[in-house]
Length: 386
Image 1 (cartoon, rainbow, N blue to C red):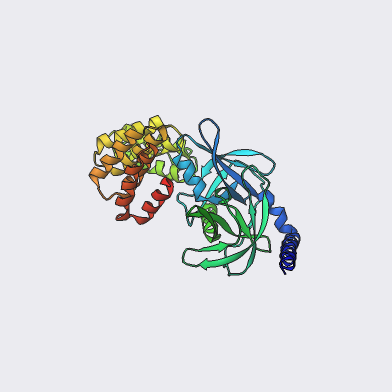
Image 2 (image 1 turned 90 degrees about the horizontal axis):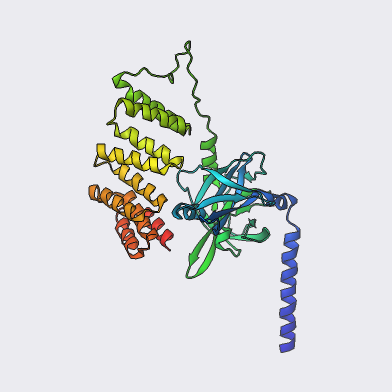
């Protein structure tokens, strides 16, 4: 009986492996061809050493890539770190722009400077069904891409997420999920619970919303000529025209023309040296261009003009964090909190500064404070700390 049972078990295992291999063999060619649309997204420290990685997939042939917010958060919180994308074949591209201003349903878009990339086809109207077969293309660090069959488990319609039956690691976060038509229906997110990683995915509709906003036509700035009296023409320098320069700078910002915006904000300040809002926007654009010394000086000018301007303190503190001046960042965020004890942004950033400065207990105290002000930010801070 024992010998018979062992024989039966071995036969069962053989049949299971055989059936699984048959499933892989039956995958449509359109799915197997999607491997070159999956990329590795890496976070490297100042010494070019890899400190973390995740996966992503190309959603537009002009260099737009979708990924999970976990790797974006790691990049943002690691001072001096760089983010890059590695394509099939080993080509590597630095991140040109983080498109998503915030993570929507754990998904974000970024852009690299490339054209003609192999983009996936999205299925934004897809609704996951328990028991449905799907395919995951994972891009684990330092190994070949894996095409894995899986089955959908429980579905949480409220959070737009669903569980899947495949093993995952943090490096798999951001991997795309395909239906049998070769369309992306979701992206993998990895959740840790009691030391184990759980396999979840979020539906793709939020990425499609972000893409639609991105592709919406933008107004273009028309250069002025002596015969052309368009709205963007150079204003004459009358005392009241500092607001015209400011408005023009805001329009340049909306079009991502930051150098031009900086010049117009400077003109506005030249006419009215006490215009704090222009200093704030000037600092933001310097920050975007990596000119952190100039950004810090601009924020300090704004604070001298308006000592109770909380946004200036929060932005100044963020610039100090980028520089690794954590003690200065802590002092700056504390000043913001002195002005408004319920300012969630200041408490969150203070928690980040404490954490980066090695003071985990103080960072956790900010989590506790945030619970009563902004639970979502409190949860985000906890995720960063742990």
